[in-house]
Length: 453
Image (tube, rainbow, N blue to C red; front, side, top):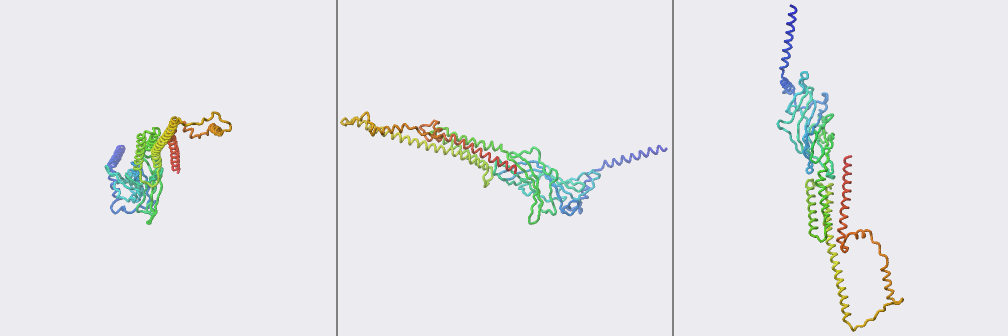
């Protein structure tokens, strides 16, 4: 009999446990979330216009910790000096009015999609030009409320931000673009922004930019004081390095080729006027078009950029090659004129000698005194001839190195025009090589200085 009672007691206890487990299994925690939300956010229980209290419920400023995740950087515009970025922006703070019972750890957090239900920090991006939220398919925003009253706000936004640039070293430059976030109405007595500890800024892996490389980023504070008080501010400095390979292929190498092509005219005959003029004018116009295309993609700044120095010197070399032909042409015509004058003078002398010879031959009545074949030692005419022989027998003057070097080149009757071409063939490449040495050493050295700074 006692054994029967014991069996029924065990059966009854098992039935109660099964019923209890069945009841627990039927609990809808989504309904529990609704009840909790109605409890903490019900009418007359929570006012979103009142900011939370300070740390540990004090009357100090509310502390909001911020972190961002950079999803992409679509463009960096040199003309308008701005850049576009898409990021996930997160804020986290504690509002003790939102504490709730987590039902023994079964409610990890509550999720809201309406930001106006709770108090929100009045943060804005101070260097923003344009911006928009993402609403496809649903608004990309959420608010999580944790049992201890901690609130996490996350949103995906796209921004176009101002980025003042210094283009003195363009295209060998580095640019620092900032992302500034500040409070609009709450002063530091009521609201303070802090970077989240650990890793406040994250960047997506394999971030691709067409003409830049993101080298590093730095977080800092930028509190500002105005007539209405001091406002909390956060900033991220993004350091971009310009990819030089694009400009080397598109600008520097074509400019070098144009300068070298302009030197071809030095090897053409000075009589080939159409060929040399066409070559000089074509290279000059092409270089001018290249320069105007470069300037069209840059803002009209007041200072001189590195690319301006390069294009200006290349344009000067091409223009100098065209002027060199003008000088050669002038020298050639001058040499031709001198040659014609010499020929006319020789013709006149020859004509006068022929006329005198004809006169002597026709005048048979004229008598001439025969000059003696042998002169006496005291004869003044013999002394004069002797002095002339001594002059001709003196050793010639030693020519200069430059004249010796120029005499090795084949020149037609030592014309100045040919010598100008010969000198230009050596001088232009040497000066251009010297310019390249000075240019690259100067700007690359300044780039290293900026990097260490």
